[in-house]
Length: 188
Image (cartoon, rainbow, N blue to C red; front, side):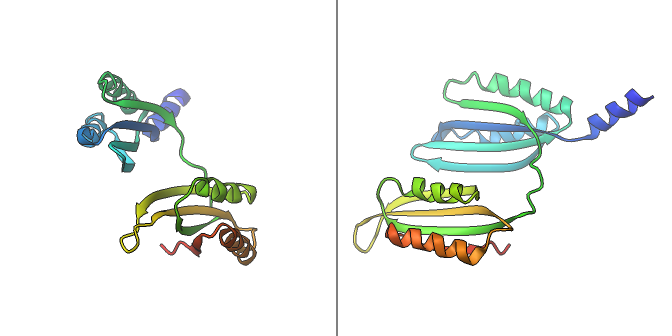
């Protein structure tokens, strides 16, 4: 009886499969992947889609019972035979509770030059702050034609860090690098 109840608990517990795909933007497999996930009896729990250059990047998190994920893995293996796709998938676990991290949004704008992201990430790393999300781009300013850089970081600040002192240190770094920046709590 015990093994039967243990297997029923396992069958009812959702497991996770992370799927990453790179492909030419004109051939986006988003619909195909969403259908394969649903057809396997899994749920599309999270999705990130970005067009970068002429390529599209998809990161999908499918959840479901172990047997449904096995069915999905088989379907993905067949889909990966398409030479225009770079597809990777693997099992993962739910993220541990990070309630001790305070979510903050950092926005940076500056004249574009090499090393800006590296220097900002280095600052966060030195302070044991996790970068949860990062979106960056460069663009040409409409008014002047100057090459510009813009980035948005969502970071997780450990609750024991003094926020005002951290903000002062970060803004001092940005002033030294001639970056315009803000650091505000995420309000949603």
